[in-house]
Image (spheres, rainbow, N blue to C red):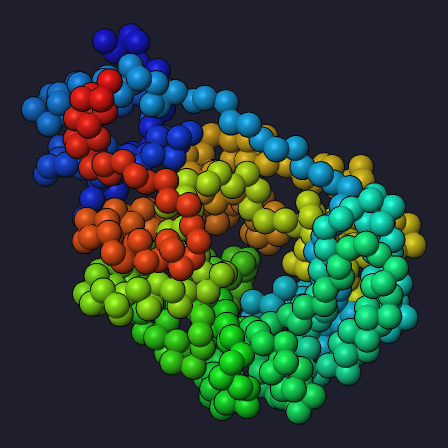
Length: 478
């Protein structure tokens, strides 16, 4: 039997369950029983053959039964690494352009992307240079006969409220030129720290209908100002708060709730920082972070159904917990972490093009200028996917996370342990989110059905998530 075992599985543990994942099909199962002998098995990716050898070494009833069940599923091809079709990335058209005319800000956040750039650079883009940059990308799309819209965002690396008059000037300029193109051109305001507001900004947001605020949870003064200034906006405005998540944060539910009191949506997103930052991520802090997410999940299950639904629907579009819940439910394969350098580019105060705003000032990642155009040779070297990237290719959860962030990798340096930080964070989110989804289904279908309907997610977990039940179900139908 063992000689015919082909394929791979990912064995992992949460605080209360032991689970396995079929990496290619993205099927997940909770294992049954006490499985005390399984405690000796390390988390990780195994060939079916190697895992069955471990079962033989354990040599108890549970292990033998599990080995038999694996053999049944293996005979149906469940764990075989079938080729995944990867859609070819188009490098001709860039649909999202983030223009950073300046790094001027009224905060000095310890995790800000532009901290290093500001130390040695004082360049700023003039109004005319911003216009020329927009024209370059609009004309480029026109030449490539693109019909998709062009999205422009301004002042991502600075505080928009300090230069809002420029934003309004650019908005007027786009209105002047957009009739020259067969596609739409949109201008989006970036997140604000909301320390200072004026009436023109309030009036614009009230008409625009959406506001995103980025808040440093360690800055109590900013939090106080944000909760005061948010009252200036009409109730009809959808308000989204992004809170950079770092290794020193605990009691995540309290953090979520404190911002959900004044915002419609709240996102906790891991902050990308190097090992010398104020609050760095470290390998040894992952156990604490894992525990914090587990505590959050347990606290959520103490809620009533309606309260839990309200909480889940209040998680914002940038929230990592919600992101993994949705990806686990939909089993959608993400082959790229984000659109940086693929469909999106950033423009720095130095007039140079970069994959995203986090790279500004790094000469190795300059992809051109409005004068020279986009260097497609450099772009093509940057564009890769989890199926071609050597660091991600053999990872069991690569289709859930979409690969590592090149910006974060550069911040962390070249030591292997440093590059594992982001991977470890993603594994913690995956493990806790998959366990949460299974418990949610065990609790009953109402909560998850409501969440799926409101979020518009494809539900692709319509099979028994209990491993023994799945084996029995599938064996009976084949």
